[in-house]
Length: 128
Image (tube, rainbow, N blue to C red; front, side, top):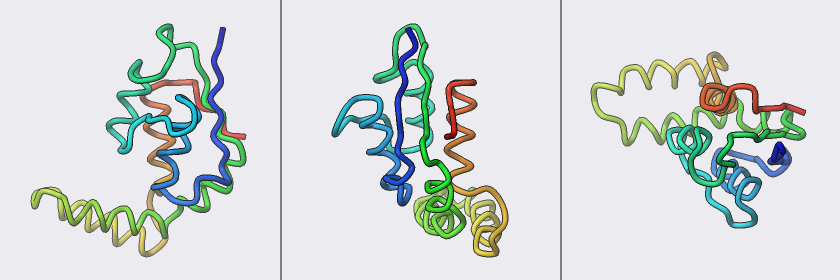
């Protein structure tokens, strides 16, 4: 039987709000389901909280609200934080992405999340 995890896009007002939203969807209120892209990919690949048989769907309702909240402005904020912690060899690429985001170009945080979900668990994401 397919398990459906529901994320309410109105609750995802920034990347910091995505993590508790997906944690609650999968593991109940206060539930944990990663707090970075690597952890999210691990959890989706059969880790913490997903059904052993991999039979689940993530339904992201009102995803358009999240898409706006996780747009280029949030991407700039997120990339600035990553840049502060990045290894010097990764900083030029991050600066390039940051410049693009400041100009309203390139993938957004929303795009990154969707990509991780689709790569780690193909076919489970439904954007409503």
